[in-house]
Amino acid sequence: MNKTLKTCIQCGKIDSFRGEKFCSHSCAMTYSNQRNNPSQRPEVRAKIAQQARATNRQAQLMTPDARKKAWVGMSRALSGKKQSESHVNARVTGWKKIAEQHGGMTPAHKQQLQSLHVAYSGPRHHNWNGGTTKERTKEYKTEAYRAYQQAVLQRDNYTCQHCQKRGGRLEVHHCWLPYAQCKGPLSFLKYHPINGMTLCRSCHNKTKTTRPDLEQPCLSQLPQYVLDFIRSQVGSDFQF
Image 1 (cartoon, one colour):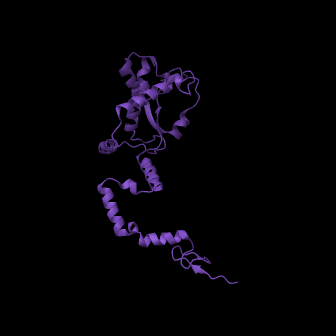
Image 2 (image 1 turned 90 degrees about the horizontal axis):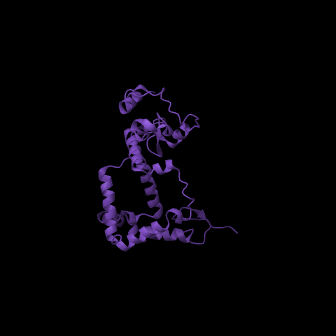
Image 3 (image 1 turned 45 degrees about the horizontal axis):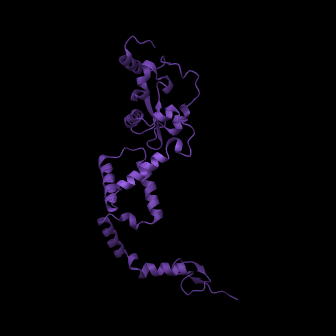
């Protein structure tokens, strides 16, 4: 028995399907929506987009996949870059507007969050191991370290000083004097930008080698301008 081949007027598929015009119910509905659904007409879509821009509701017209794609794209574009003051103000304004629309966070809600934080912090947390966090890790959260990190990143324009890659996962490397050697009269170099260099994670990992002399200051190979800076801070009679 010869089968009669037909062409779907929506997707163009050629097969012996049961319908007269469409190969599937999905193609039939798509064809109908594109021609009979008012919201699919170009002039109607233009009016919807205009109204969305006027009421700041563009995101509501996006599908979840499109919204996720836009979020990933913006995150990658802004990664490692310092946001302008106008951008920060616009984002804060948007957050405040959303909070006002939802009534904001009530004092009872704030108190509840605070009580949860207290209830699950320290020894009461399920991952508590007896306070084994390293002192070095704790210092990463201090204001002094964050100020040092931000100063080095801004000075180097958020660019890895080895591979010249800008943005991405950047870290600050103690380039002239290792962290362990910044002690005693040299402790000021622990968080001074002159002893910092911006590196990407890959380049930073290449500098992490096991050295038996980390506890002993090795200053003889430092550049002259670094040595002069050290003398200006600790005195000209400092012995290298």
